[in-house]
Image (tube, rainbow, N blue to C red; front, side):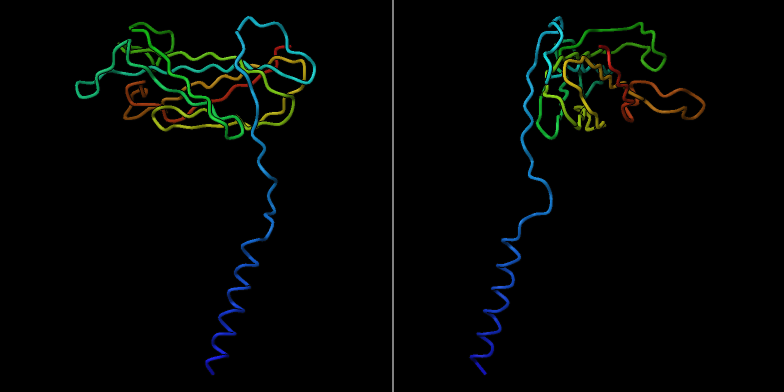
Length: 179
């Protein structure tokens, strides 16, 4: 009887060990390679594509969370899971052409040009406020693209338009090919 219990335990251990060494059905993740290039860089060579990524946000300063022009805001770009963190200094703004951004606050702008190999990518923006949106895109070699993440503060609430002080609800994404 004791031998049966030991034998049964060994069989179970072998089964679990076999499951552990199974080859995953997903494709292996190959780290994406990109480089940050100057905004005025000439057109990319064949086999590579450039993408200009822009976003902005306006933040209000509170007594318990004071923000000044020197207080940086961190945007994180994720390209197929590889992170590019950008810390941006702001500028004080009172007047804005964008209705939800009217009023006193600190405005942060991010504009980056990245060079990637042609192919399919998932590009995401994650803000310091833990808001995140992503897009899947196909890049052709020798072309330049723009990708804009526009903050959306939300629809009307209690008969008034939501403002930047209410916080970003999500980002609207606009993508186009330039050349």
